Length: 166
Image (cartoon, rainbow, N blue to C red; front, top):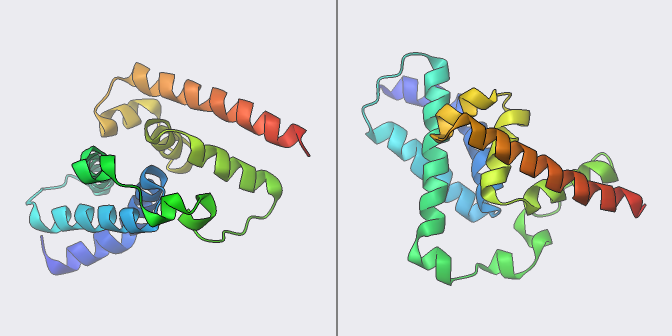
C-alpha cells in the first residue's frame, strides 16, 4: 500500500474504528491499542480492496477481531485495569451530554455485552443493514437480528427504569 493511500484511509476511518474499539473495550488505553493494531495490519498486509466500502468493512472486521483477541488473552482474563477498578466515571472521563436522556442512553449502551454493543453500533450509528453486519462479523443474519432484538429489549427495560425515576 502506498503511503498516501494509507494516510487517506487512516484519516477517513480512524474515528469509526476508534468508536467500535471504545464500545468493545470501554477503556481509552485498550481502544488505542486496538486502533493501533488495526491500522498496523492495514499497513503490513497486502490486501487489495475493491472499493471504499470494502476498506471500511475490512477495517471493522479487523477491529472486532483485535478486540476479541484482547479479551481472550491470559492477561486480560486475569487482571483488572486501574480504570475499571476506579468505576465507570474513570473509563471515559467526564462526558457532557445535551440532556439526561442522552446520558442514560449512553450508560445503557455501555452496560451491554460487547457482542450486543457492536451490532447496535453498526446498525444505528454506521447505518448497516443486518445482512451487511452479518457479512462484516462473519455470522448468520438471524444471529444479528437476534442480538439486535436482545439489545433493544435490555435497553428498553433499563431506560424505562431510568426515565421513570425522574
